[in-house]
Image 1: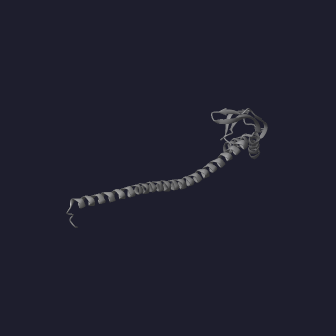
Image 2: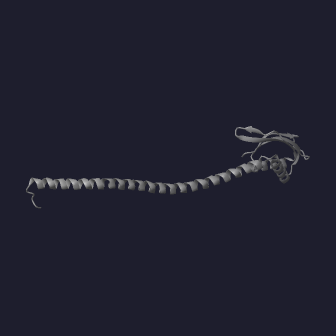
Image 3: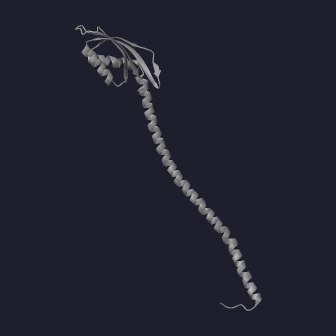
Length: 177
């Protein structure tokens, strides 16, 4: 480096260096800020795009799950609508009686009632059979696809006779199980 001998040249050199730094600072500082702002904005957009891709995937997954649940609910509602019809219950009782042997003389549905969250269809039945047929009838009721509860049974005569027995029974069929 060359030594500067006069004060005038030293001052001029300092002014030139300061002015150069000032121009560089004025030019580079705003550009640096703009560059930093652009990088921040770009990172935000990348995050938004990746988030929107995840959101799209999540949305597709949620739509699939929603459709699956909707089909399940429609099936339950359809089954409930079908199963709450008294004709399906009467058909089931006649089918069981046909397989096991008792003769049904009366099927008298009562008014549907609600017990907690469950709907019950009370039914009064009158049957004629022997003990074995009646036993098999009750056994088939227990194995039926509908949940049933026998509330009352009255058997006449109480002695075993070859002519058979007459049975009065009250049962409740759960409609939404």
